[in-house]
Image 1 (spheres, rainbow, N blue to C red):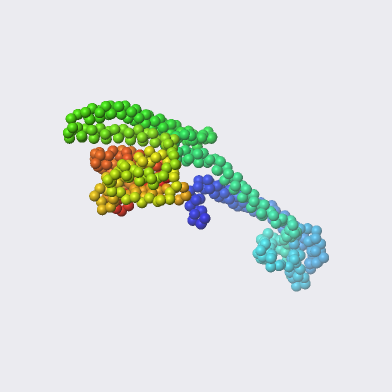
Image 2 (cartoon, rainbow, N blue to C red; image 1 turned 120 degrees about the vertical axis):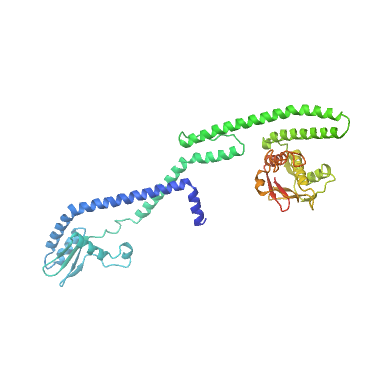
Length: 430
């Protein structure tokens, strides 16, 4: 992943931002503490330790003597963890080993720094015969600072970072449950409810969302129950009215009445079918079906005499679908294409082909005027139509595409609608 990708992921992750905040806070706390302690120790050094160290340096310089005695200086270095450097006309000696090139990686210009510190802390003495004696701390012996100490410190910091991330992840674990539950509720799946794992703010939020979902579910079920009850109650009176209308003397009025009653019957049937399909896959009666043969049969029977172009792949394997519901889907799509593509230069085209492993693509395209782009997102909603007219010739009552979407979703597929320039194309993926 690129640097920009990691940065975007970090910005969108509340967990990593909190861990970063903890690390920055820990680093800032450590810096403030170290700087404060340095100031405190520096004040204590100047007030107490520096005079004692200066007096001790006087005693060591007196022990070395004037002119400096090399044997005494070597004895002091052997006895005490100090370093001694003598510069003068008679003696040039340094207790520390000569510098190597690798010493620059441990401490740059160590000698010059010690000389500066010696002057600042009063560790430089000048003898009467012109010698300069500089005292300092001896370097630690090999092995006194183990090499693994730095790696151990780094490992401890990484472990603390991992623990902080694990704690933050556990603390925000309910957010994943809430996000998954919100997606289920958005799809109309109200079971199972969001688990309430803790009694903190996130747990209380999950409980509130569950109670809201219960209320919404209850309202939706009440609406569906009312719609089903009304639809069932209307079927019998409509059937009797149509029988009585067919017994009337034939004429334009009788034909119009029979036609309107048939439209009302179809509307009630569509309403009942849409409510059954709300159960999804459970409402289907799936069986292995030759989709190409189903399309040809529907075109030869229901759309006999209509001009249609069929583009069907010949080698598609049978699919487990509900033939009756798939006929309903295809019939509504073709009806819509014939109605809105009337008078176009080309007839509607039905295409059936493979769309990846185990998937098929069924599309119906007309060559009419299409639809305004701002209305595409609303196509497929129940009772929505792009115009205000409610006549059958202008497009029915807006249940056809809604039923097609429900059938596709019940089969685990999708329905996509887009302008094909010219015309509208409906693509079903199963």
